[in-house]
Length: 164
Image 1 (cartoon, one colour):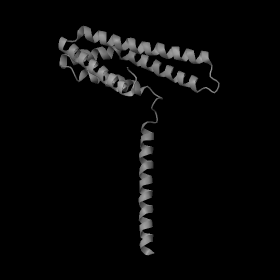
Image 2 (cartoon, helix red, strand yellow; image 1 turned 180 degrees about the horizontal axis):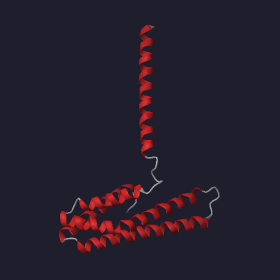
Image 3 (cartoon, one colour; image 1 turned 60 degrees about the vertical axis):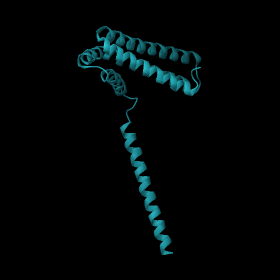
Image 4 (cartoon, helix red, strand yellow; image 1 turned 180 degrees about the vertical axis):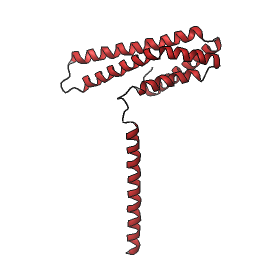
């Protein structure tokens, strides 16, 4: 009986330790992401990640030019991404409404499409500005990166059955 009681205490102690660990990890990540979606830091992170993807492929003079273009375009990119986030939020609200109004949903979707178009225009404007000042080698590097990125995305979509 004493042996069984020891095993039971050990099992209960290990279970308690595991539960405390899991709750601690969940609490930590909950605290870390508490502001996600409530502020615009995700926008800045996304723009910075995009900029870094360009910079890692370029030499020093092209990196300097690229930083300048990103710094000039950053406010408009930030605004466009923010408007897109707001518009998508509105679509979500319209979809979750208890008594959905088709005209409200249509207006929200149109707003989202317009915001997505603004993001697209800003990104294409960024590429246009970069293309005008980068060296031939840098333009080729960016072209290869975009081609590779799109081919990976197309393969991923084909695997899901999205593309014929």
